[in-house]
Image (cartoon, rainbow, N blue to C red; front, side):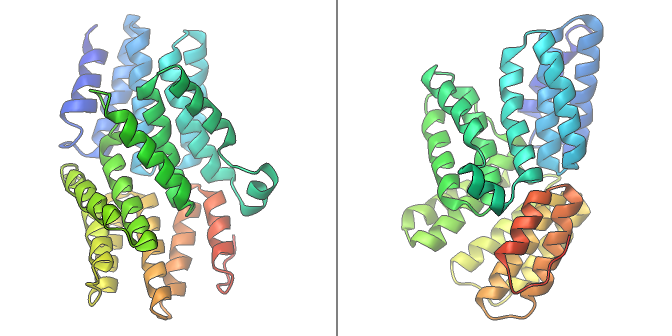
Length: 309
């Protein structure tokens, strides 16, 4: 029993992360935390706790609940002087708070909604803490993509890929890294018209397929996005609808919201009146997730639509 926190962390972070359903992995990691605290293996107990939080974020757990848990465990990490786990948790906390609190107005006032987090990231790079830096890069690329800040998302993805060249252990975030890498690459391929980003999109998609068990909606979202990128748009709306339904069945509410927003973007680009429906649904889902800041931004992103919070 004393070894259980270490065994669970190894098994569910590395070996079974592509095979087991997300919610089951999350529960195992929570149990690993509890056992570690009972047996005195504080270091690995809190490693399980931070991985549990990362897993729950990637599953779309309510952000209000998640930020409460993050704060509780951060206090424990401070108490027990577990700096590695605390620094990793900081990256997630900055991301969650940005999703909850960010708005266009506060961004204009503060200049950069991830300014403090970027300072921490640069500090890790300067101190050659490359793994921690990749954790920050992943979370910041996610939140930047969600907020349609594609230039910063590109910077974070490229920085993470560069840092990972020197690492044996990589932060895959239970498949979420390859999922968001593919989405970001597709968007940049659209915007830049560069073949390099098309190549990245296909490469990242192949990686994402390895994590498809228990997350079939991700494959459907990415396949639809790649089809649109390649000009195969005849069944795009139908395929977006399939991805949306699958995301709802998988209970990944944040990715259901993303699928609706992407469907809205596609419809808007084609002058399809259904865009308003998809944007409205995405708005509702972001609010259910707890991403109030994103909901505000989505309303302002589409001024012709009558969103309300």
